[in-house]
Amino acid sequence: MTINTNKAIQATKVDQVKASDTCAVIEQMFSDYGGQHYGEQCDQLIHAISCAHHAKQDNAPTLLIVAALLHDIGHFIADQQQLEGFDQWGHVNHAEIGANWLAQREFPASVYQPIRYHVEAKRYLAAKSNEQKRIAVSLSYASEQTLQQQGGRMSEQQQKLFELNPFFHQAVALRQYDDLGKPNEPITVSLTPWLLMIKQILAIKY
Image (tube, rainbow, N blue to C red; front, side, top):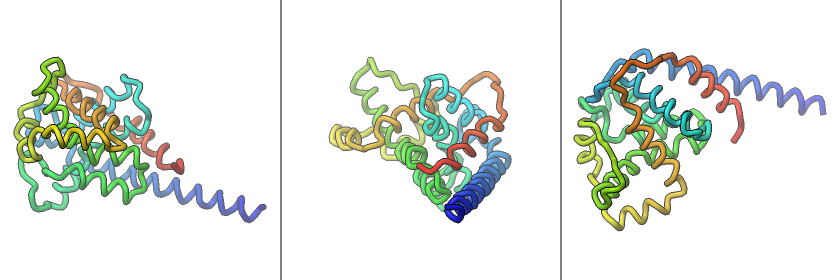
């Protein structure tokens, strides 16, 4: 029993180190690329924190709040590595790039899967807005430009298939926070409380 307890303690310490390392990498990426705009009026640091704030205000689960904070991290990775396809709007495949990186860092699926599908959610909501005027989707100029790169508005068949996605609701909610998280006025931009939230979820085995 003592041996098992010791192993559990050691595993916990390893998890804590991994979480701290991941948080440090994320913090450094925001330091290096958080000032980038990628075509938007606000920079990426403000955008990320604003999205997370809207998710928190909406009483979203902690994992979705973290997804809101990190949904555009794929842009940072593409910028850092100067991946082919990176341009003034960021990277067209940033959702997949970010989701894959977060999965490798052992984030829960409920963080990285909504991120993987948040661009599909954008295409879905844009199509719904086009079909039903009561569903208003306000896209920024940059989002309008990248919408075409990302495949444009979904067809009716594509919408029905997307609705079957197990992360459909989380991805749609995330995309809505994404649209809301582009403030024209200054906001508090401290990463500290959000990094603590990341560290906490990485310390839990989902």
